Length: 105
Image (cartoon, rainbow, N blue to C red; front, side, top):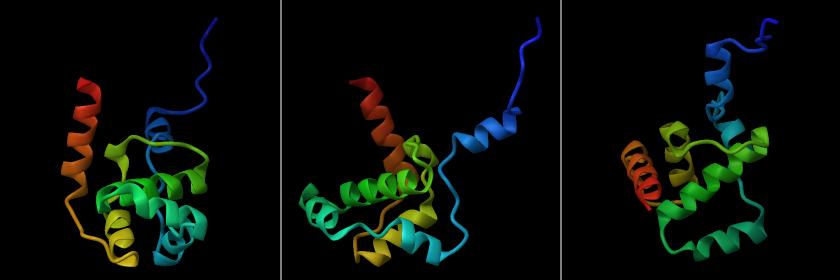
């Protein structure tokens, strides 16, 4: 019996990729942390951890899914850095090195 394919390869890749927001209004909606969570996130110790958490929070809020760090958008990273007045960094380099560190443990 033939196997049914519900999604094409390109649809699967799009499904597994973090959402792409159209504009800063959408980004502001998804990346605004509730005050109690924001206070807790401030205790993470550094700007990178705060940004990672905010990205994960926003993407989950938008899709109810978690995504690989490598699919996080540098535009979203910059938006969060600006919104919360945090240090900016090269997200692709940091995300790649964090993934490698995690896989090697």
